[in-house]
Image 1 (cartoon, helix red, strand yellow):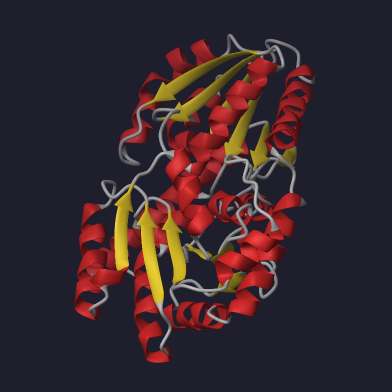
Image 2 (cartoon, rainbow, N blue to C red):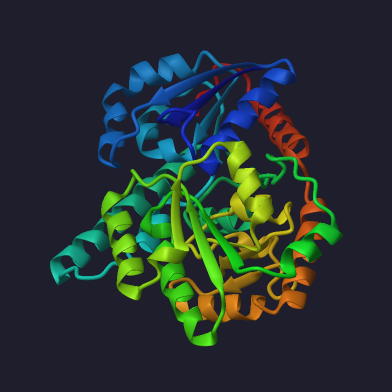
Length: 377
């Protein structure tokens, strides 16, 4: 089978979605399939519409393959080409774009009525384009049931499969006794892991940990992630830490390599990423492999594998008081240890990357074989 994987940007970029794409590319090749990656311009949403001006040329190029897999981030770029394809198209949907856009605007402050109206019109425009994309593909691969339900509301294809990411990137080895020993003493070690952008909720987390001083909780927060994507947001969060007088307990570590990230998770008690919207949240699952208790939100797919109050904590998005209460409760070291052990147990019950990716590869093979070559979309 000859497969093309269409992306917006560089497949080596740092994000859970691009990591999934790389693993899929490699698994297809391991199973004997030919894969070509087509990288379209990333840019702004408007700039990603530009390839539609060259739709015929793009469609001719993609139609040479047996299956065209389109990362959902590229959806604005392939609208017109998809109508001309002579090969089956499969959307690889890591998130619903309009949901992410809506989440980014939830906690924005200081915007006037005009800006809010423009933002709302922008979200509606994205939803309309995304709807057209999902209605124009032959099939879809989703990272979570939550994502599939959201896509169904936009008219996503009936033919689909859910293949959630795995959490075994770091191949962690940690025992229940190690988790108990780690929980026994020292400050409550909290880690934030993700690109420092508004949707990830670092501002909510900072407000939450600042409230812990009232409960006499000894804590430390380490922020791991790219700080160059949204510098204004980074500056605002750093200002919040200074204003709250907690700068000495919040460390901004920047981007780290995998080995250093794994070492940080091994030392952490809690992985806290209270996102406004997280379609799946692979980072929570990766942390659970180290017996690290995930603190996620109810917005998105984390509830599909984080058992609230047992193997992790789910809080409403944008609620620093709920974040603070959850962390205060986890300062009960017996509770922290038991939840860490439960998190590790739930991690072990999840499928690994080979199982997830084989499900996708088999789905692509079946989709490609069901339509004769030359049968246009």
